[in-house]
Length: 180
Image 1 (tube, rainbow, N blue to C red):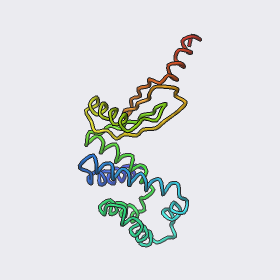
Image 2 (image 1 turned 180 degrees about the vertical axis):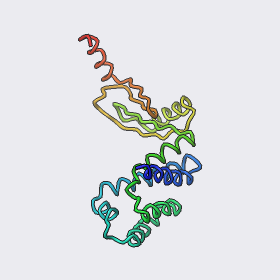
Image 3 (image 1 turned 90 degrees about the vertical axis):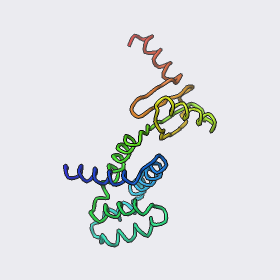
Image 4 (image 1 turned 180 degrees about the horizontal axis):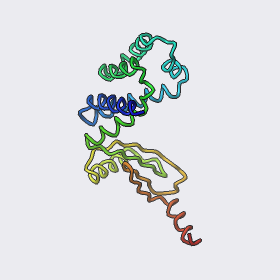
């Protein structure tokens, strides 16, 4: 298991070394996230990648031809090395570690906003600007709508949750009333 931690760190550091700014971070993050998702959700791809009977050279050839047009060649080189070393199963953990170390290095905060209503582009842009100013970081932004919230926002910045939703306020009031 300790060997896997070393490999995860090595691959994560390799991916992170490709990133020098926020835009590159977004591109590498998206590529790795899509690749992890495809390997996880597509049973044919998953079986092919994990197959012990398929020759490594064949796997590498298929991956390179499939991803050559959509992946940066440096990124593809690292994925190829992972395939050659039969380490592609580590990709989800490598991606998670890559995100963590690169966000820290480039001063990026992950912000998830959940709203009870669909925000227009201008509102999202204003919110993003305010979050950048408040955190003094670049923002990796994800927005979603949850109609069950009734009103307000949930804003999660890295590991800190700010919940101003009416649903939570009502639940808290209910708990106070029943004496919990």
